[in-house]
Length: 485
Image 1: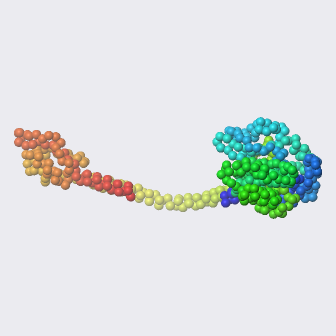
Image 2: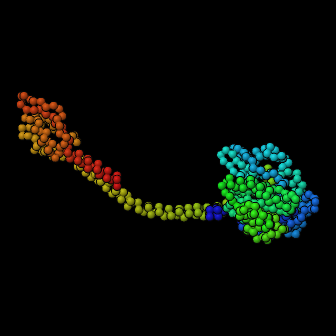
Image 3: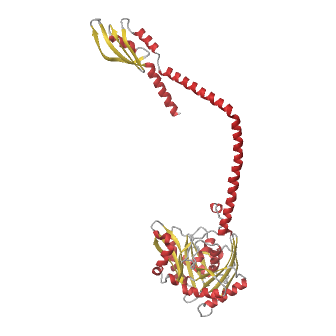
């Protein structure tokens, strides 16, 4: 869902294309012409041309075959691609430190003569990163001799056929296999009349490939081919996925593999999704897959002509300009127009506010007066709550002190109270004060002494207001309950 919702208009999904694919194979020259209209890909025609008897393939012969096919199918304006056999190229996985990622193209060019027998001057090459982590990266490298391929490219150019891409048969096969067996890794073996090719496709990349000839010709050694596939199977099982094994060959080849491997195999000729004839010897799945890879602009394609000038694909400029113009028009509609409408609304609100200003001033004055009165009431209430009336304390002292007791000082310092005075017996005063509802923690503040002249006890007593402490405790309990709520 996310893939389709975020699909760019510059995506190849919406493109139109015409492609002619030429596949050089051991069994002959295979050609295929296909078209793409939006998301629909169709193989329009295909053809097989045998090789010259007992002769190596000459550039002039290849050029004449391709030119004739293009004339017959009227596809002079179609993009032309060339697929060479695996035996013409060196395909291997190499390892580099992760730090070279930003300059990988330059590093591979510099290291090419060390990794292969060829130099950058005499080689066509391309590469793809298979896997990477913080320390190292694995790269799939495909290299072919430049002078050998140039002879064919020049002969084709002499017939007005310009090749824009050169692929390797075992590497282009992944496009057709991944469209047929989706969401799984694949091991495939393709058998012809004189030889075989195969590969392991992991995460949409052909990470390993094999090829060989039948000796004698036309007699496949199934045991030897199965032995050759062991490294491919190991590549898949190391990733924790058995994947699917596919045979591209005749029904006899398929049965022979099933008997030897004692396992279920898939037959590409039966499973392929494109509308193609089954078992037609004129048809090459390498040519069809090269066609599909080019038409769909597979991001993991290997093009030997692009290695030295490898660049990331960019969206077409026309589409970018069209998208920018669309965004700009939307911006005008959603930003400029609302600003004009909003300004008119603001002006209308300003006029209404101006008309209401006199009434608002009266309301604000009343509000300030109400706030002042509320603050005064709060202050009075707090004073009444936090202070016990001094008159009540004096009255209480008068009622509970013994008759022959008189005070020289009475100090009320919220919440403490202290009294000085004389009594016939100071010890009688303590119990009386403790029994009062106003006082607690009653005790002598200093030692008492006997005044012999007056025949009385001189005392200083301190205590705390009972009502004050009770009010404080009540406030503390109330605050705790408010926090919990």
